[in-house]
Image (cartoon, rainbow, N blue to C red):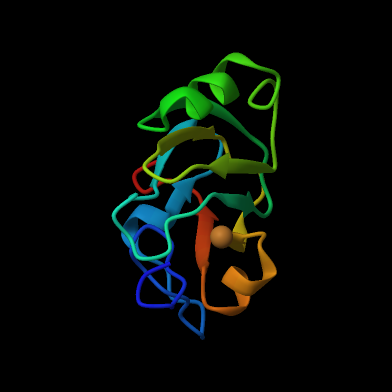
Length: 130
Ligand SMILES: [Cu+2]
């Protein structure tokens, strides 16, 4: 949340299906997708981030202090996920292996944040050169 507007990795929602290069993920290949939640933002708070169309694993957390270390050590991050929590100041890396092609969304599951634009498109597609 920056300036009372919801952003995901620094970007707001784009109507019409806008997808940035780093939001295009290859089918059938594991990629690590990094999310950051700077604590310096005006409304630094935890965000439950949900990714449609794919399951994933949380592979790394950093910057979240004791709470982040407890999340990483406990059962919250264990196994496959469809949503992960990112704390203020944290960087979370998730390993994603898309299996279904298409245009999907990822967003904060806090409805106020989602409605405020904390939502983006992502596209799962055959990798170029494959
Ligand atoms: Cu949120």
